[in-house]
Image (cartoon, rainbow, N blue to C red):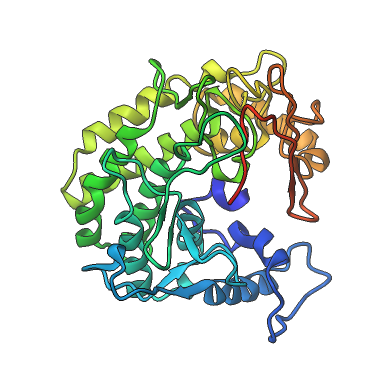
Length: 356
């Protein structure tokens, strides 16, 4: 989570610290400093190992995603080769925070490979497989399939932003793929105020790392992703002289002006969603502060609240006054543990959110 809130500043490798705990053991043992409150040396060594081991070779002589791209490796979410696919959001995080452990040309080809999986209506893939298969949505146990995962539009923009800047300016890459990002962001469903919206009657999955939590109505975290992505695209479109910087800027401002619609009347934080899971969102509130949204007094109040409850908010991914997510008329529980990095959830059949 810390790594996410610094998407543009590339602090150490905290974005993948959780993965560093859970991946398969390697034969090399990274040096540890047990006395350090945060062992940066171990984290950076482990992150380098994970990124290296996450590379999986592209297969298929007639792979439709690789025509004209010539990608050789994809970057999977783990180092055990159990996924066999490159997730859009995971790759965006890893590239932004771990580019020093990637080969620039190899990673940029992998970016183009992801963009080749865009659907005709602008929807970006949740993941692309090494054999050329594209996965956009999935089938849950509810009455209808999940058409798509809402965050992939913004994450495609964040992926392109990172890839066209972290190794130095790359105008060619940005200008080649910018039109696809514009369509990807235009595809994102939003309410009249500009906030990203998930229809309660036919919900889709939301932010990928809480995609098995039933959130509907106006969404906080996905709206913040949209703002962040649009801001970065506006800046780079102006810098590189391609794309409509004014569109990205106007849309980011419209959504930013509406975030306080999700302010929680009972706490200094902001709600995760306006319908199902109308509960204070710890991650979302921290991200909102990092993006300098709302007002200075509200941001300070949120920071004070999180600081007062540090020992509780770092263990659970929500405001400490709640012990479980309880959407309207349903049951859903999410536990986010910094010790196990596991998610445990009980999701109603109406939603049927499952990770595949």
